[in-house]
Length: 84
Image (cartoon, rainbow, N blue to C red):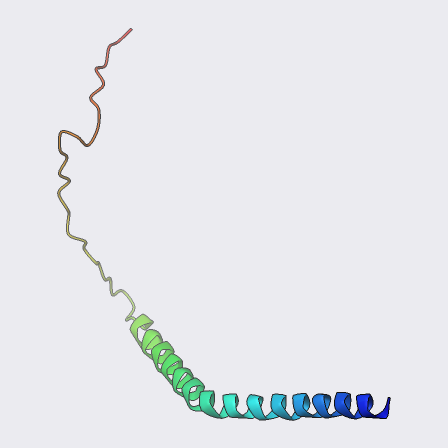
């Protein structure tokens, strides 16, 4: 019974130590990436705030080009209309 407890305690200790080491390694690798992403998000938010600042009375109109709709013979059925 004593050997069984020793084996269980060793496995638990290895699990706890491994979990701590892996968590530290992952946070070390991802730390720089998270900081870069955070800085990029902050820059985008600042740019968006600057774009939203408009002078009073200034109107901006964004035009979208009209697209022509091309229909072929096979694009639908013709239904004749009759008044009742």
